Length: 296
Image (cartoon, rainbow, N blue to C red):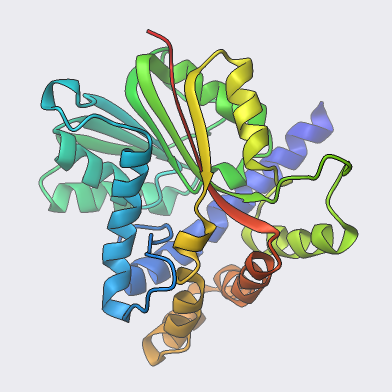
């Protein structure tokens, strides 16, 4: 057990330091939404469209999860698990008039997220703190909407992660998980091919990720908790334009100078982006959304 805890502690330290270093770089180039954009397949987009695509990712996630547009059914309390610098929290709080709390392992992110909330006059609605998603500092059944936008891939224990999402969800709450996964295994496969495992390991080393899983693995975990209306979908084709756009932005003067100021961990992450593209083109890496509801 001590070995497992030590390994998880080292991973968490690496994640915190990675985002401490890279969040300012990301905000400088892409704004306060630290996640992929959602695009129409095969569309051509200009750089100015990418921030709108990030907003669309939030909107499409809500639509897929069937979060009601009826005001009386809007969520009143939200948790943003792996909140980055709080872009989703602030957007959702404004959209629904809800209170939202975000958690992150990065002190730099939490501080910046709170500063942005105050600057936008949302500090009475939105707050951010440093906390572990696997041991959330909230009581059972607290939130009407449990939101995890591209944080599940960092979780070393997916069962514990999903269990915590379900624990803090109120009866009738919606849970939304948007995350990177690996492809589904075939009926005769016990594991990924060695070359696939090697590629994922290189990506894990750059982004401080533990072992990957498939979308169906998430579905099985949610089913084991007796959650309802479980559904998932592969959104890889909708996010594919974002990866080359990130590379192009890194090659601009602003991108290069910002990257060099950010530190070695951020540079290592940027250099691994072509590996993500390779994984997508080889049908290995999937960008999945998984949603469900907690029984009333």
